Image 1 (cartoon, chains in turn red, blue, yellow, green):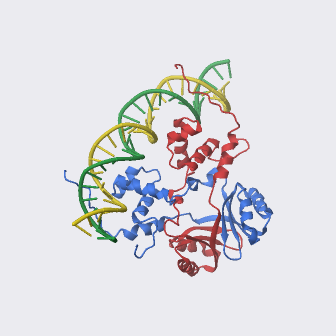
Image 2 (cartoon, protein in one colour):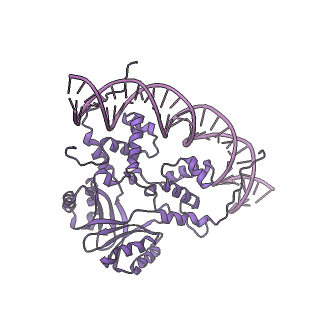
Image 3 (cartoon, rainbow over the protein chains, first blue to last red):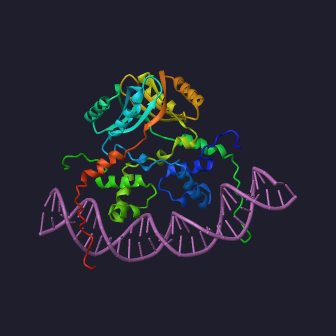
Length: 178
Length: 178
DNA sequence: ATGCGAGTGAGCACAATGCTCACTTGATGG
DNA sequence: CCATCAAGTGAGCATTGTGCTCACTCGCAT
């Protein structure tokens, strides 16, 4: 089954829906259907399945930390006792300004994404990280500029075009009467 | 004007709305109002202002790259000719797998967040980054584990509690008749 | 005291939702 | 070859939600 691709959970049609939604987050299902030349029913079903599958993350992702009063973003890389990574992660969870933490391969064990109200705040948070038992060394880098703002659009576009071979089946629908 | 706090764009009430929305992204304005004991009118106005202000980011933020067929995340740090940073950023924009790029303070000039279908894919993308004129050195670290998944909840909670001093004004509304 | 900004319940026309239906279509497979 | 199946489609319908405007009431600053 399947041919070249694994099962991406999100097929070309889903991608088109997501793309349209990215363009206008507040669009109604009806509007999307119209825009994509799909039936309202289809869009509704797709969307339902989409967030059942967890393809749609939480809503907080859309909140801008800057608007919340934390205009600064920094990345703190940390080396830690690898036997205690879970323990460290647990402690980091308790620091609200920590927005995301990854366990990395390579020299650096942890990448910690931090937001802060100002540089003093940042300094304080950096200190807290270093204070976590198991953390051996940290290095803080301030995000000066968001050179490429977070985007999945390019990927979505690619996924959308994968099945859109110019062909538009356009079958079905018209039953007997007209 | 203002007193202790700067203007956070998002006040306690806004934060509560956002929080409720984070808990249930598909909640209707009506449901939110009921849940927060606010009038539908208020919630609607707040939300409208919220995304006018740009406090709400794009929708694509909510799409999971994994579901799109890119289960791997990696962070590529790069050193580059600082005079050509803009140029480099421009080239990076053309690589779809690049999801986010920050200009950093410190030894490392660039932090590039990459998603990939598999390790080979990742290798290819890393190569592309290194090939950008102006990029001098790169170092790739695979994100092995998301120790703390992206969250703003803690910050939102803090913002929400800032003004929620147990007091519930509950004023207004009841005009003459009842 | 007065005006302003923000919140509130009410009301209303219109649109969207959630759902089911009968139907078609393209693949799958007996 | 015909049956079945998953997915799509337009239609219809009752229920909800939306977008909007009102008149009004607070708290606050002028």
